[in-house]
Image 1 (cartoon, rainbow, N blue to C red):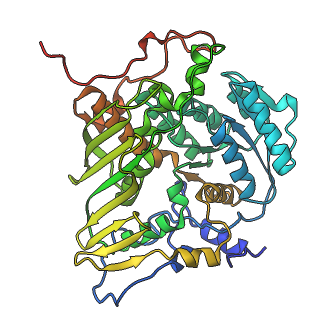
Image 2 (image 1 turned 60 degrees about the vertical axis):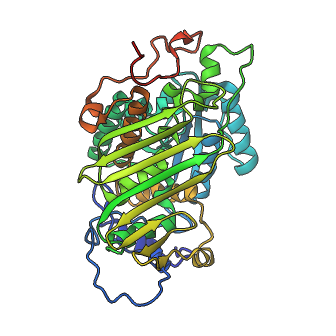
Image 3 (image 1 turned 135 degrees about the vertical axis):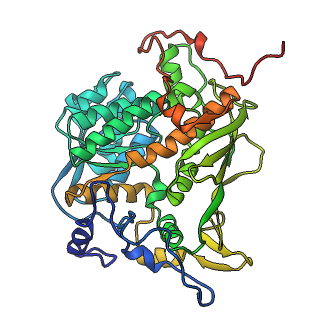
Length: 458
């Protein structure tokens, strides 16, 4: 089969065969076409990493044809429904055979949507409801799990899926606390040992402009990385007003994005994307974090609506993290990476500017549109997953995402407490957001309060 972008199945498999158990595929692929430079580079670049030592995904419009793959969706709300369609659009010969959620109407709504949009009929005995629905989906005979539950649940679901030898797509974030982080790391190691494929929802890893930017930085175009700033500042996110018929558990899960035990707060749930770009591009973990935040406008839940965090990375450079969800304020969702020869930014499109202010490279978005039909990273992440499954080439993105995920946790806990957090202490901390009375019935909500940093004045 010849792919529409000129990448044959044979060439994909040949390239993929070079990948290690962590999915370390060398440079190459069509993303290198998207380069626009001004002037001639007379200075020899010093690579930050040698080609072949870092992962560059192949991103054709469709995954290569191969064996049929059956998926089960856990978490059937808006993101789960979207991911289900993304998965089905990513390849031929894939289907969805099982659904699970804590609410019956969510399961049925997705089943109806799959029937109307894709003519896929998920029978009633493959629609599972309740807190244990994830186990029933995983045990139903599927090959891959698409996990789009509220973030709190993902770590345990990942652990069980790996125990049952299932490939996984895990929406980000993949944990909300230190206990979940350790669960994810252990499960990822087990997945590596079992040669399983795990792709996460950090979709910038599957945006061609970011992939090409990463390659340019690895080639040394901006020189050594000396610091950066990452932003996710936007208006207020969605919320649910409580209905009288809902008990405490049901209300919180339906309004999950506003509760810190379920979402991890928006620095973890949403801003992890931007933090992840810096940890990905730099290859560094944070050593420590000092941050602050507050709650100014949020209408429900118990979390903050703004954070500002200073991260010190492993080699001593700093990354500043800024995120806000408040209407009527300046918006900015982007990343900035400073180097000794210039800087890279995603604001206004991915581009590189030298120290004299000259734009020396930018991603050619028009060329991408001309060459590819599929430019949606939410679909391309499933293309990558399916290609790895069909070529029997393991990939582990959970371990990498866990780093940016823990960085967000470090920043959050520093802001909540007012103290400095460290990688060493946080990864070993007993921090566990699991409610004491977790069940679908009535929960005691008295303990869910907005954090106040520091100590009261005597």
